[in-house]
Length: 433
Image (tube, rainbow, N blue to C red; front, side, top):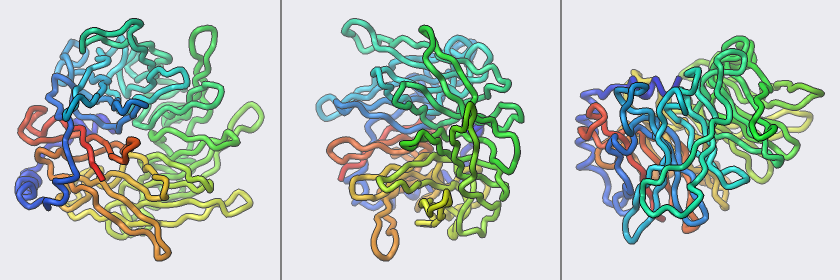
């Protein structure tokens, strides 16, 4: 589970020395555009593993994988929570909306909260719940106006995973809604062969009914689909698996409704080869453009060993054409699990793609990047290379824009030396045009 891997990462002496040096060498042009708007202390949350959601008023919503009050269920790090950041004057104020406590209401949320059709926040926790296998939740704001900064929202556990055929541990992909208000998501394990599931939650008599749409049951079909799914206009679902497939190192798949069930079609298989230009291990999810092309990332491999950004285009007859748009670079030593992107991409109105990497970049602390299309291909721009110092490091989540073109995201660690076993508890950042 990604959450367990995140928590198990320990600081390397060489990295700390490199990051300390990088603080002194970071170009001033980046310092003018990059700004930390909140640094987590542990008490208000720690290790955000997902990106952010923005509302119409420009307020940011996110989750922390750990931190908050320590209790018997999460005695060492806290169970994590959901927060809101609102701009006030020249600064930002964090408001905790909900704190998870483990068995009762979930723990370790690795996906961001997203707004549903009814205006409530929806998300998942990777652990906790009555069975310890994670759950799907909704959060409702207080019925009356809150007069303090500590008015907690009310959680409803829509479904608690039992750990059998229904799945285990929803990953860090967003939940998705169709036009009827049904919820779709993935679990990174469980199912009949313990390789993960795609599920649907349907409103029913004031509650929710879960149905497993597809249980990954063989290596050829992929395994560990932790990135969530997206829908096309015909109601087909698309996602990625981190492993499995005929190449052994992940797939891009499509699920189509057929009769009373769903059938899987693998659109692309990734090969387990650091020398493969295609990359492998697609942890992040997919996005569509207006023409129906799919865009995604791989976390590893590619020509420069830092993962890749790829496109899948419909080629007629149900076929798809795969194309690597850009191969990202990793310059460190290969002793960690995650290097390149783990969050989904974002596309702006001009067709430019934006994303983050966990440990790529000039200082091996991760990066925020932009890819711009042209007649000659795609050009890469680093918007920020993380040092692991006061700017944070190792961003696992995706990015989000506000209406002014400002870009927001999180890092899972930093600043070093400040709580959370010396690695730092993470930050929320902003990049202005």
